[in-house]
Length: 287
Image (tube, rainbow, N blue to C red; front, side, top):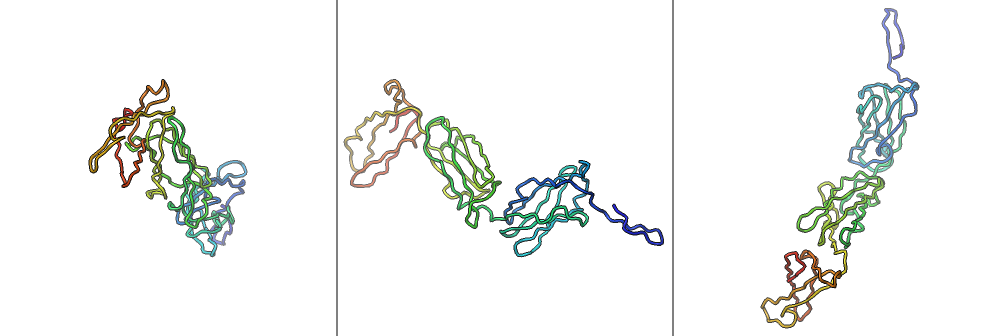
């Protein structure tokens, strides 16, 4: 505090003042980038010249954010640790904003420029890299977040929810890396043969194209044996059948493989359209 005046009765008027501070350390995306209609934040560390933290209450801070139309919105402050404070604000439109933070009337952050963009649009997100791959290889794909106004997001933090699973419900673990530039890298080792799906949600909303589909193929070359009357003759409106036995190329095709029904694709050409059904017990024999 600083004494500002003493009147004739001895009454002392004092004013709180901010001591000299070291350059303020800012951390967090909200110190440079933000999304409108979303809470943005950054932390600041206040140290005095003697390296002691500056102890002050959150209520002593005033946070003002000015948008491109010169409209001012108020932010808030929370004490995170001794000398460490979290500044939060909610911008309401896109464009360059200016952040001002003061304590007891003394400005400690002046005209901090923040680029505010629109939130991510799940219908515009782009996914690259999902397709067929061999057993025990790594699925590696990228999600690119696009905002409502069209351009790619400049930073990360989007709440993507991802499930990678086979059609029988078996889920595969994965890693998700946020590049903090609008790109997200997902990796997963797929250790079961068959069809798989990748479900991607932004919050509770599915992104465009989800679920994405691919096939996990055996790591070895395959061979097939065909048998059954349905390969040669048939009768109208009667069920015809034949078998496909899928074997590994190893040991001269002596090893049959455990495969799911969705692995086998069958096309039958003729004077009318036929949609065949495929059944298997998972023993490499398809009917």
